[in-house]
Amino acid sequence: MSDKTTHFGFQTVAEEAKERKVAEVFSSVAQKYDVMNDLMSFGLHRLWKHFTIQVSGVREGDRVLDVAGGTADLSLAFACKVGNRGQVWLTDINHAMLSRGRDRMVDHGFTMPSAQCNAEKLPFPDDWFDCVTVAFGLRNMTHKDVALAEMRRVLRPGGRLLVLEFSRVWKPLSPLYDLYSFKLLPWMGEKVANDAESYRYLAESIRMHPGQEELKTMMEQAGLSRVDYFNLSAGVVALHRGYKL
Image (cartoon, rainbow, N blue to C red; front, top):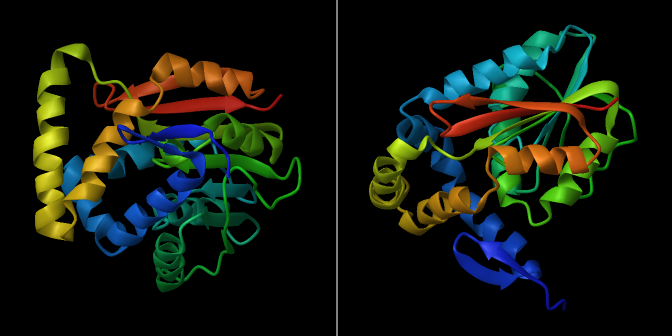
């Protein structure tokens, strides 16, 4: 056992324990994940993801990797973009979430491949994908720097990585946002998903995640170039984009 520690929300835990604890959270919320996404974001998550698709520049015939793709919102949209000549891989470390996403893909008539895997050890060759995306998953990873480097590795030269994630809200809105995150969000989690603790963790994990400029620096340190970002909904969410040159 390693004596290294990391954060799980506001808790300090052994690195080995974080992956198990995160798995427990998403196994618990998988069945109500889509419903809660709509409630928590007042439907805005659909606009954030739509913007991500537009910024991606994905075209017919492209290869796309959706890391921590969960219930496949992005994978479904990308599948429509790449057409029969393209390929979209849906991946997630959590079996319950991946199963939900795979079932949704099939229900919508797509037979795209899926893989249960750790983003820090992607089972794909170098220089393979035109676009890699990770939406609301990076903050749950133990070694974000390792995961970013892996995502860069599997990109072809000229390919781009898109990271859609909660970020630092505009300061004047912080008090209201905190009230929503730590009071209303767990309450909704209890009422809808019968799980207040998982949604309390999700609120805490947002506060522990790097802000806009820090994440930009991390992506640059992982070897990505021309990194920029877009603040969405007053910085509640940010979309970072970087290229492998």
